[in-house]
Image (tube, rainbow, N blue to C red; front, side, top):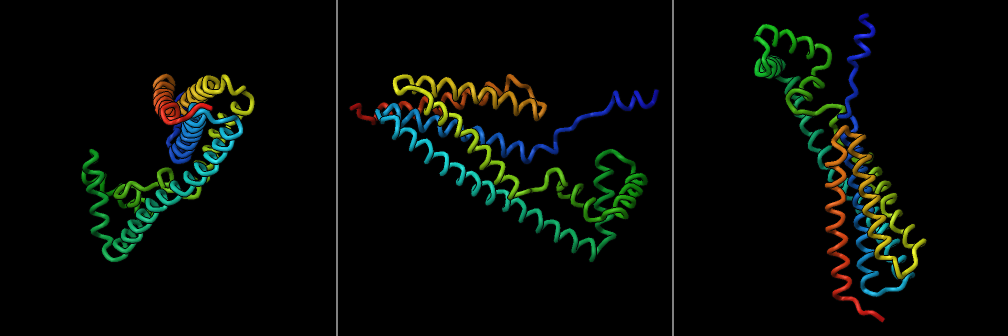
Length: 235
């Protein structure tokens, strides 16, 4: 009976996916929106099919490189800050362990434990892994939330390329006369699928994520197409 109860109450936590899921969703969303918007802007300006495709491919390469560099630099900055905080905490543990122990116990008291139990918990956690315990409780740094620059950069670049490739395939397969409508419609479909899949992976409401992603995609594509039509010259 106990085994069944344990299985029945087993939980699936998705917090460990936050880092790579955020980078992957951002990359794919940006790939679809930016490339589809670029294609629509160039098409609305009256460019031929070859020029549209070249612009789309250039957008894919530039966007993937920018996403990788941007994610690596920004997440590296976060990682540098975390490492500096950990180094300082390590020094404080070595120089004044009693004060650090008191800080740890005070944290648990604020969370609702009585002082005696808080002191016992702080003692046991510190004995097992002092730096790890203080990193989690004082700094909010854990294996789940720790910054991973290379992972974020690769995930963003790869998913941007995947997202950007989708409108490009539509450009190759669609006649020029219907290109604007086919790229617009397919991009919205791709965005809706992305929103639903990312919501499912993160355990979030599917409809909310889907509407959020498609709304901003529609806005970006409409603005870019409008600018292309405004400044373009039809042959």
